[in-house]
Image 1 (cartoon, rainbow, N blue to C red):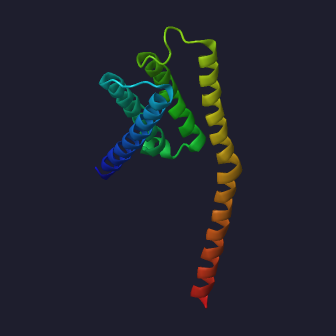
Image 2: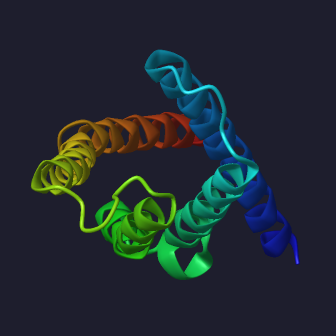
Image 3: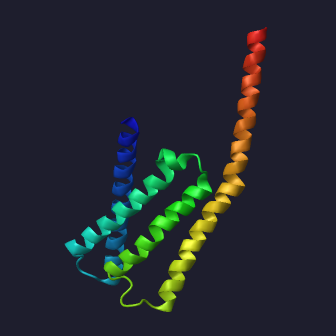
Length: 151
């Protein structure tokens, strides 16, 4: 039961953060482009988008099923769950009118690939090295404690 409560807390927090961020982005774009209003239907679609993204995020990164798989696997599952829904929501929200332009599709593909590659590089180059350092410090600490107990 405690795990379900934690998952619901993560879900609530991720929906609140992502929805607030996207509403601020919509407001900024509206001000920059001169659009005078945003419809309630658009905001509800935006909320549905955030709910799906948050469910995908919580499932991929916080469930017991996914915890033991590793970051790259979790990230891949998140992308597999989220990207098709993202494209669908872009159509439903009217961002990709009709079939979309090749420039829009290329930009979306480049953004998705860039974020995926950046996350993998961060994991491989920074986080793995930090985990090795942490493990070494932990072993050093344990050896020091063992030596203190023996004395």
